[in-house]
Amino acid sequence: MQEKQKQECTLIWFRNDLRVRDNKLLKEAIATKRYLVAFYAFDPVFFKRQYSFERTGKFRLCFLIETLKELKENLAKYNIPFYVGLKKTETVVREIQNDFLITTLVYQEDETSDEKDIEKRVRKVVGSKVKKIRVTNQYLYEPHQIDTLFNKKYPLSFSSFRNKVEKKLDVDTELNYHLPYQDIYSQAFFEIPNCSRAEKFLGNSFPFKGGEKQASVRLKSYFFETKKVIDYKKTRNNLLGINCSTKFSPWLSNGSISVKTIYKELKRFEDEYEANSSTYWVYFELLWREFFKHAVRYHKNNFFKLGGIQKKTILSIHDNKVIKNWVLGNTTSDFVNANMIELRKTGWMSNRGRQNVASYFVHNLQQDWRIGAAYFESLLVDYDPHSNYGNWMYIAGVGNSSESKKFDIEWQANTYDKYGEFRAKWIDK
Figure 1 (cartoon, rainbow, N blue to C red):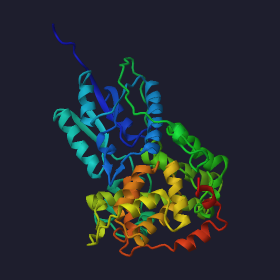
Figure 2 (tube, rainbow, N blue to C red):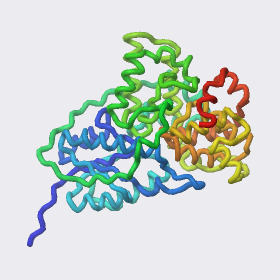
Figure 3 (cartoon, helix red, strand yellow):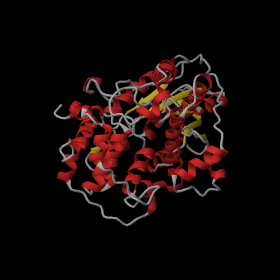
Figure 4 (cartoon, one colour):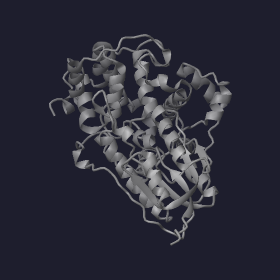
């Protein structure tokens, strides 16, 4: 009996760009004028252990599952099948090949080593005859803009980066496309891990769910309904409360909202309401994210090595008892302890808290900074490899500054938790 001819398709590989709006993946896929099929893989490499910590812990996993469920619903509105598998990425692709003849593969490129390794395996599985379209979906300023501006000599300091980028570059926020409604709909497997939101501690500073809709709701609320962005610079170091900071980072990290969408709405707010030092500071923080994103393109695996991008020779110290006490919030600093307990129970920690507990880990406890970075990777709901490892390197003095950043923890506690409200909330909980 003759085998049934397979439907030709363009395969859309979702990674950390889990949205239907403002997504280059979809624009490029639509342009191929083929039947569209999408997939996501829970690749085992991201569930391995580093220094005894599971790389993707329960909080980020739960947030990711919520995001994927919504993405599936959004794609189904256009009859786009969405395959999700609990296996190696290339294995998921092979299973899709059982149903479809893949003529084009569209995916977001990344410069971190694990992602590059997976990309190589997927490209091998689909074969040389399949057209590969790579897009850049993570940046505010495109790689070609940065490469041209700095003549491929990336600055070491953020200040040098910021001063030049602000003066010379414009953000291209135009990305017009319309998803077509497909006549054919194919059933797709949708395998996800188990994760319960009941595990989340109630009353934390990030009570939001994952997904593109929630990201949009938060953006609208923070900018246009509460207008809390007007006071961002004054409140951003606060340790308690939903609106002391934007809270955009978890959705940014898995790509359920794009950085260009945030920038565009920020500029709209400034045009319609007010532009002040606080609205600028939101852009300033997005620029820090941008700095680390592009830094990985230039420094590659040095971002994850002990000597960092400075390539310093330093000792790697790993005292399990000391590390355990830091993780559990059993150190001699109640300010560090409160932040660490919040992280362990909620998957969230303020930026001020992150800097302090990282400084304490590196300088007071004198442990290998990569272990602390790995713990953050496991627990933080908004983990992003570029910003996480970039900031830890900065604290350790092996990153974009050769001087290590040791915080006066007692001064920080008295300044940012003057009345001890944050410590009282988390200590002995």
